[in-house]
Amino acid sequence: MELGLLQQQTTKLVMTQELRQAIALLQFSHQELIDFIREEELNNPLIEVRESFVERLPVVSPSRSPQPFYDHEGICAPMTLKNDLYQQTRCLHISSDLRERVFYLIDALDEDGYLPKTILPQMAAEYGISEQAAQESLDVLRQLEPPGVGARSLIECLQLQLQRSHPDNDLALTIIEHELPLLGERKWQQLADRCDSSLDAVKEAAQVIRSLVPKPGAAYQQYEPHYVRPDLLVKRNEDRFVVTLYGDMSSYVRLNHHYRSLLKGSPNEAYSYVRRKYQRLLWLQKSIEQRTTTLLRVGESIIRRQHKFLEKGTSALAPMTLRDVAEDLGIHESTVSRAVRNKWMQTPYGLRELKSFFPSKVASRQGETSSSQVKALMRTMILAEDLTRPLSDRQIADELRDRHGIELARRTVAKYREQLHIPPSAKRQSYRKEKG
Image (cartoon, rainbow, N blue to C red; front, side):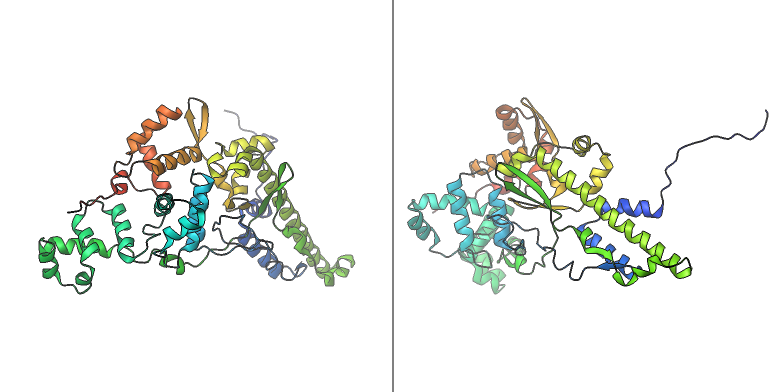
């Protein structure tokens, strides 16, 4: 074998630190980008960040409300029990009249999640409907999360929760309805005698009752809102929707004018230092601008493909992949993935993560549908079910196939149901106590 030197020319991308950071900038969340800019400012005297640039950008919490999510200042309230219930109601496939009545009940809730005892006749009188129709509205509210919301007394609150979690525990229900004072005093033997049950059974039932939450709204009172800054805003402009940036940070990063004269000096050590820092400033401005342009293009592609969502809500989300957007824009799929990471868009249906616009595809006889649309169908089926004979996951799968041409395995139905925070059929079973 002959040894020798071989000269070969190849093309190779060198991943410099600045290139890695430029890529990272695209996937930074809004807050991460702010922190990065602040760090650059500390390390580079030529960088001047316009005063209060962070505070001047809108700050909102990813909660939901029945009205357009942003107010005249682009600021929303933090997550509350009512905001959460409003959003859940918006996702239901119910009539506009019924939705309005559920909103009415949500408005009447106190901070613990309770309703006034006179709410149904009051509602019936205001809307000119029967108390049975008012009760239907209340039934819808009580199927939402958290369990027990919409009760008019402690006993009713515990009953509602027990129906979901332990629908067959007759002893626990009896104690709740008739013997709560004895339970509070821990008079186990007296409870056992009054309920004609064993001591062990009474203690087990008491343990179940203790697992229930007497104030469903309490968790929201302790909730510390997680604030995010939306990157994009979508609004209707006559007959089309327009995507805009929610604060262009590139305009807030500029050259500190105190160093401008040094850039024109003669070459020396100070001049070289200033030139290096100036190049870093130009790089930062360009990288932020590239991030902004890419994010805006990705947002526009998403809205073009998901325009029905802006007309009808979450149930109208079409199946879409990162590759679909990448092909639209002629960029790599990984670029789209970085662009949607931890990014938020303000929409007429609230603040949404960009990644939520990419529901998976589900095959149907009519072609492809999205997992969001399937979940909406499932929720509609469950809301309409006979509470004494709730639909099993297998029955839901069969109905999706027979009525909508959607083939789903039972375990997939179970996964979607859990993602909707809907308990299994056994826990949805409405308890009917025999009156003696």
